Length: 431
Ligand code: HSE
Image (tube, rainbow, N blue to C red; front, side, top):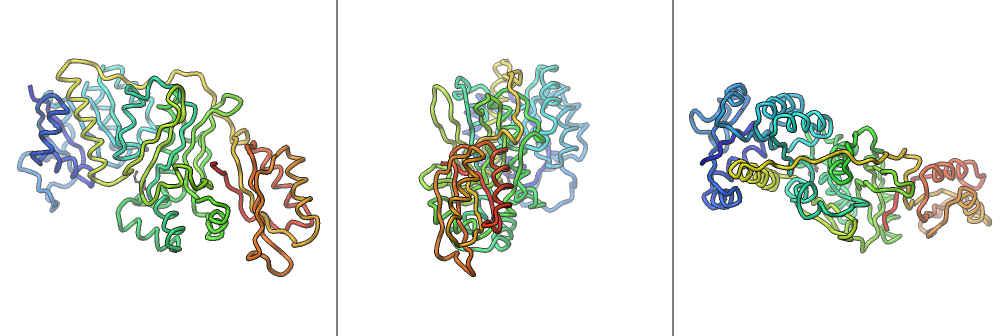
C-alpha cells in the first residue's frame, strides 16, 4: 500500500521537504523509516505561475485546498503555510476529516493547541509537530511518547531562538554591533519576517509555551510567560558578564519553584562559562532537561533552516505513515496534570544587579544592608577600576537564589540610597 500525502506551502521548508522526497537516497531512507512507500500527491501553492527553483510537475500543484480535503486517498496533510490563521483552518479541517496533520507552526500550536488536539482526538487522527520547536532537533517525539516520557522533568532551560543567540554570540566574540549582526541574521534567513518577534523574545515565548506544555502536562498559555527580549542588553552588560566569567544568552526556562508552582520566563541571562548553555554559539539551539531518574540531558542542533526543519517534518511523516500502514493510533500529548503557573513575583533565580554608586566609604555597607533587609544573600561583588569616573564607580552584585519580588524591593531601596546614583541593569544568572 502507498501512503499519499499533500504538502501545503512550497516556501523554504516546503521546498526542502519536496526536494528530499525527490532524491533517491533520501527517498530510500524515508521509505525505510516509514515502513512502506509514499507519494506526494498534491502541493498547495498560492500562485501556480511562480518561477520556482524546484519546478512543480504538471497536475501536482493546486491553489484549491478543497481538492486536497475531499480526496480520500490523501491521508497525511503536511501544513507549512506560515500564515497562522489560514493554516489553522486547513489543519482543523484536515483533522476533522480524519487526516493526520504534520505542522511546524509554533504560533498556531501555542495559540490554538487545545482546539487542534480536540479535533484530532474526536476524529481519531493525530497532530505531529517535531519541527515547531528547535527546528531540526529531534526531541518532541521523545518527550511525548518516546524515551524521555518516563521521566519526571523538573526543569527545562533552553536556547530556542537562533537569531538572538547569533546576535549575542557575535557581539561577544567579534565585538560586532547589535544592528550589524541583526542585519546579517536577516540576510542569512533565520530571523523572522518581522525581527522584533525574535529580539523581543516572543518567538522564544511561543516555543516555550509548546515545550513547557509537553514537558509538564498542563496547557501553558503564552500570556502566562514573563517575557523580556535582548533589545536592552548593552555592550557594557556583555563586558561586565565577561569580566565576571559569564556570557549572556536569551534563555527560555520552565521549572518548578520551591512552592511547587511552574515558573516560566524568557529573558536574557548571565550564563556561567562552563555551563553547557554558555557554549552554544551562533544560531544553534539547545534544550536542557533536568529530571528524575534521568538527571541532566541536552539536545542540541540547528533550530531553523530549510533542510534541518524538513528533516523533522519528514520524521513526522514517516511516523504517520508507519501508523497508517500498521493501523496503530499515534498517541496524543495529554495536558491533565495539576500544576499552577507562578506569578512573576514568585519567580526564583540568581540575579546580577549593576549599580552606579558614589566612590566613597560605606557604599558597600549601604548596598549590602539593602540586600540583607530584603532577605537576599549576596554571592559575588565586582567593582572595576575601568568604571571609575568623576567620583563614581559601577559595581555588580550577584545574588544567591532570590524571589523576584525581593529583588524588585531591593532595587527600589537601592535607588533611594544617597550613595547610589542608578541601577544600570539587573538580569537573571544561571550558574
Ligand atoms: N526566527 C527563528 C529563530 C526561526 O531565529 O530561531 C526558527 O523558528
